[in-house]
Length: 130
Image (cartoon, rainbow, N blue to C red; front, side, top):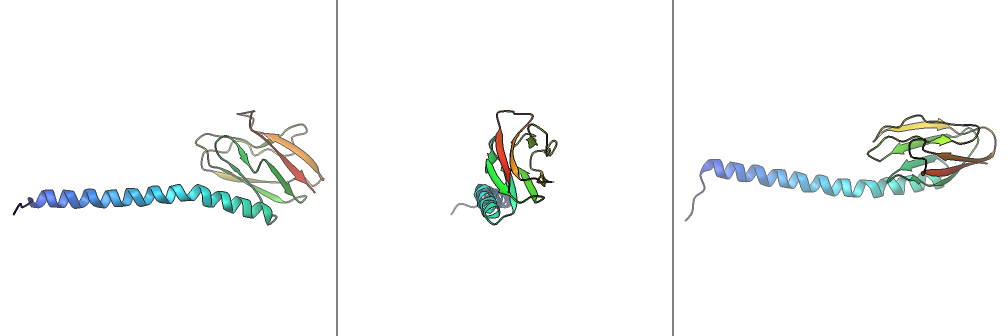
């Protein structure tokens, strides 16, 4: 019968424990974005204003809220973004760091408010207030 020295058995146990922790962590992070996205979809359909930034895009790209409603913006990217109304600049979050969440108050006047990320101007969306 082959016998492991005690140090080898302890090291093997530690490595197996780390592997188990690693795999459970990765499966949690793999699930998190989809659950966040479904939460965002549910929130926007329920009337709560929420925009998620992921993969250099706003989601949803078009959101309808009530005048004066709070709009929450979640940056799930690994870089800083903004959410800034074009034209009269009715709202501007300023810089939103990676992983950060901020909010702003929707304009009190009904209308369509296009917005961009001022850092990555190819990112755009529209906030409709009605």
